[in-house]
Length: 97
Image 1 (cartoon, rainbow, N blue to C red):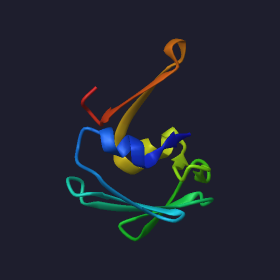
Image 2 (image 1 turned 180 degrees about the vertical axis):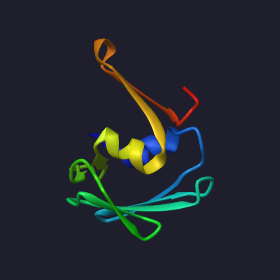
Image 3 (image 1 turned 180 degrees about the horizontal axis):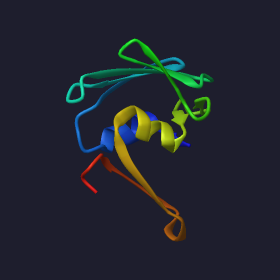
């Protein structure tokens, strides 16, 4: 599970994240996408169309909405690579890495 808003802040293109309560909205102007994630749901709305996620999202005690890494990849067309020996995840725009 990864913190969606926090990763969006460091992603290589400009993404605007707004979290209100248990809902996170991500606006990706470059890809012309608006993504809405809700705590406990295994579905996201992408430009008003439902997209199935691998697992339900989770809201942590400190207010971060967490989603499966594969969900980030699917929703934002990202390349995600996990290096087990370093316990690190690398996320880039699709096709850059």
